[in-house]
Image (cartoon, rainbow, N blue to C red; front, side, top):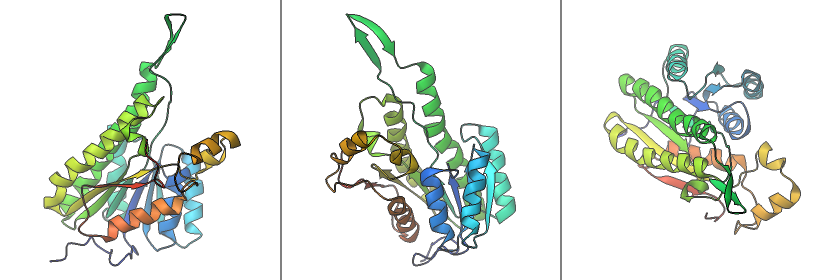
Length: 263
């Protein structure tokens, strides 16, 4: 029995509708371009309209059919309306990549001379949880409903992080990415009956624009933590998404793409 999603066969994503959140920059834009080169139909979501326009232009250079949707993934109304628009424009959704995420790093607290001088604010905590965790929940719920009602199955790929194991100065980020990994397993069990597979990728240090802007000494310190002694390439994450799409027996797992680094 073959339950492969519509239009996806042997790493061929041509004509498949792939929705990518956080597609206005960084890893999201890189993944969009990767799939544009392979003939996918792209629905790009981001809160940054200007960034989305740049991503659309980059994808159109490869002849891809692409549309953009300005959506705050932390807003239930915006997410539901955005995915309704995608379903109307494209006739459905084959793949969702939950990539949108933010960082608001800080120590839980800092003590000076025996007194608490600083602590992570509730705003720092909540903003990261809202985007990185609630946003993944809202987008998955919306896309999975479209997939289940269409009856063609689908694939949902969540971007977690190597930091999900816990990383100093990232209480909020680590908690959100651990939650993403746990939700992945839960949804894989719940959605299998509808032919929807759910998996996650836990990237390590990836060579996005944000990493490229780091001070050389900081970047050097990060690379020393990686056994392969380099940062990852965005296409190495995109190709892992493609692997998940292609492998019809892969669900409920988190694939670590981190050069051997472990937090």
